[in-house]
Length: 100
Image (cartoon, rainbow, N blue to C red; front, side, top):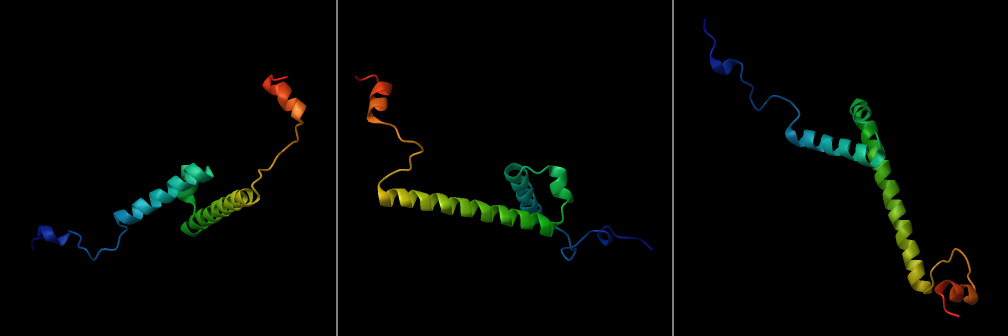
């Protein structure tokens, strides 16, 4: 009884993770490391559902921050005035600019 070379070759019916999944996983790992300052080993040990939860919450947080910044810019445009942190008198401005 002889075995042919085709006996042990895997076919396309074999279930396994493909390159697209690996690329997506690496994108998630990169986002966790660079944006959320997690370590590579922590991210890789983390269950998938937790990793994706943290990524989703981080994205929501960044979107909320961007929306608040846009709202503040719209308020400044609508009022025509910026927000001052302190008031300065005209004399102080003249003194600072060196004009008397």
